[in-house]
Image 1 (cartoon, rainbow, N blue to C red):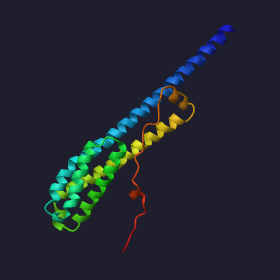
Image 2 (image 1 turned 90 degrees about the horizontal axis):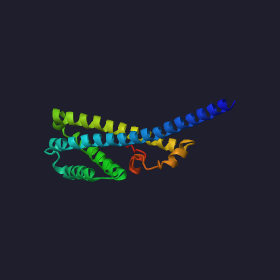
Image 3 (image 1 turned 180 degrees about the vertical axis):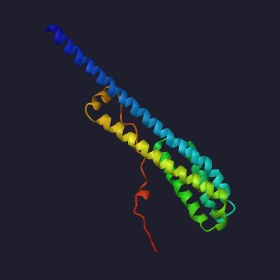
Image 4 (image 1 turned 180 degrees about the horizontal axis):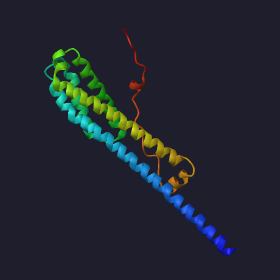
Length: 186
């Protein structure tokens, strides 16, 4: 009988150790997914910033009166390269996205520019990159949610507390301007 009790105790301890290792490893995997997702956002942002000088060169001749927009894009691109925090990057990113929309809106007034194969290619590349950035942000936010849910719910919160897995990640959020209702006038 003593042997059976000893084996039961050993089995319970083994199950607890395996469970403990599995939960700990889950936190490591989630933390690494968050880092990878954030780096994917950076990869797509870099891709966009590599395309921007070509876009500016394509539209420069047509947009003499839009120097402010071109300057804004150039300044935002430089600022983004220097940005370190997620909030800083998101703010610059949103201003850059707005400036790019302005360029494409203004391009509507120039049929020759719109017809330019180079401009069309750049516009498609930037559009595809914008979609990838949006997807990367969504993927990042999903990983943040999974990490935070695991960290805050029982029994994960016990292990998270023991190994100092803190809530250190922020969600990528739209600025208040983007959350405002769209006004349509005819």
